[in-house]
Length: 177
Image 1 (cartoon, rainbow, N blue to C red):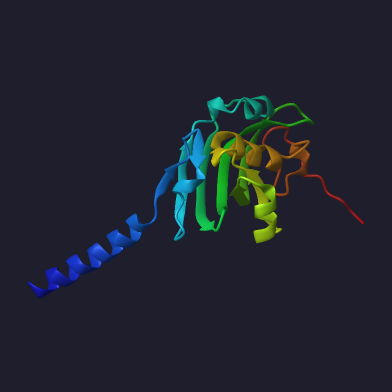
Image 2: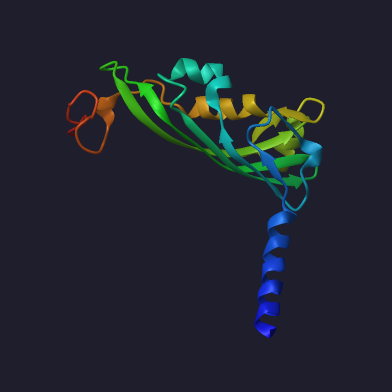
């Protein structure tokens, strides 16, 4: 009987820690920064990138793209610090052989969400400022911008470092000095 009581206590402690942080859906169109707590919350989930029109132009097939978001949100006065990763799996067109090249992208996010850029810079000049007009961040636009900025400018399969290119069959580019 005593063992069950200890287990229940441990379970309740873990549950309380888990629910202490709010979970915000990555699928939401906007993020109200007033709802983020001082103790920290999370923004996570899988996003349907079909609504990301700018990303659709950069990739071959949007339907096969998987985007997952995992960010910690911590209130620091008027600023919400957002730290974490956005993972993207999909296909991008090789600008060398014009074939479909697999894309595996891990985007590191280190942003400050606030109504004024000056508040973000005063807190931490290394944070990328994201403006929350009237306290609301256009969440999908912000996340899509983060991914677009991390895409390679001119993706080329010949620059692969691991083995023969699966698209063109060429050896990776080797630079000899």
